[in-house]
Amino acid sequence: MKRFLLIAGILALIIVGLLAFFRFYYTKKFSPEENVNFTSGDLKVNVFYNSPSKKGRVIFAPDGLVPFGKIWRTGANEPTTFETSQDLLINGQELKKGKYSLWTIPNEQTWTIIFNTTVPSWGVNFDGPARTPETDALKVEVPVVIQEKEFEKFTINVEKTDEGFELILIWDKTLVAVPFTTR
Image (cartoon, rainbow, N blue to C red; front, side):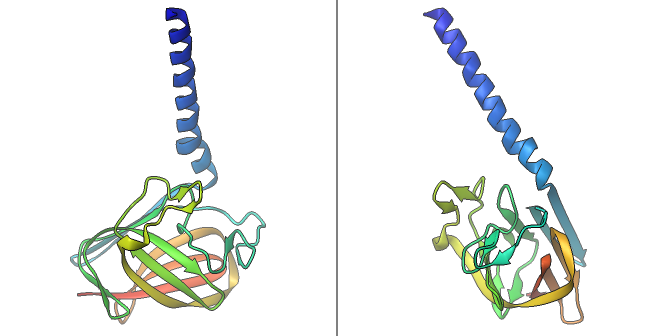
């Protein structure tokens, strides 16, 4: 009996080790972690995400890798997080300082950008995205801009503009900018 328990314990450790390897190393090899740190005066914004590559795939389309009209965790491997040190105004709505998971619903002409107060550990469940709609802090709709240049890697950036700031998401030929100001 002791021998059986020892073998079962060793097998359990091997399985846990393999799962950890696939989750934290193998999957991130294809969609590496990215960390955007933006500072302007007292404002500090941090965006953490995993950046998948296009690899010849159709990205934003009705039956693409990221289908139109469906919730997307906005990156790969785990949810994208957006953290701000100050209250923000986004499309006239207030987003309190804090840390949020960032979700999107891509469509052909517009995207819905969702800041959610819950940050799930992986971003997807067996039945789809792990977003809890009841904990959405803010939802805004922004227009899509189609670029001439194709971007191989999904990229997020924060930039200063004449009117304030922009959270920029770009992949393939699709660019989405979310303008915001400090409160």
